[in-house]
Length: 95
Image 1: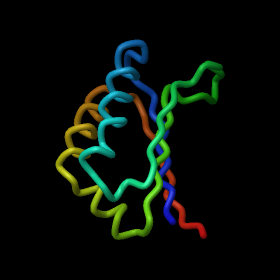
Image 2: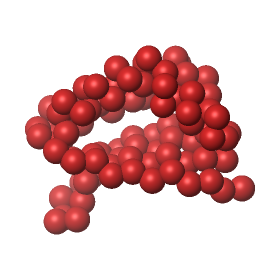
Image 3: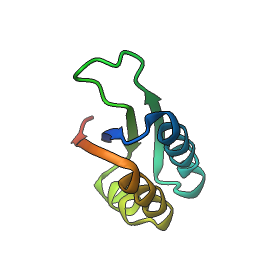
Image 4: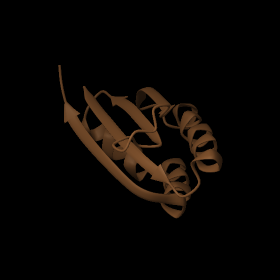
């Protein structure tokens, strides 16, 4: 199994986070390779916090690659890239 985790800080979190979350949460209906997807908005607001987290699970690396190249994902990615300040991510494999 693969976990794809992304943290994002936005220019205007109050506006951008709900839009990004709604777009991301629609992806499993368009990309069947997604085993699970969850998003969340930070509530602590500490100096090391990110505005939004995304956690996506895939069966294998091929499914992650399919997701990465899917037009529906590109649409969400375009929105997030236009509205973000910074992003961090990690992808890891587990059993």
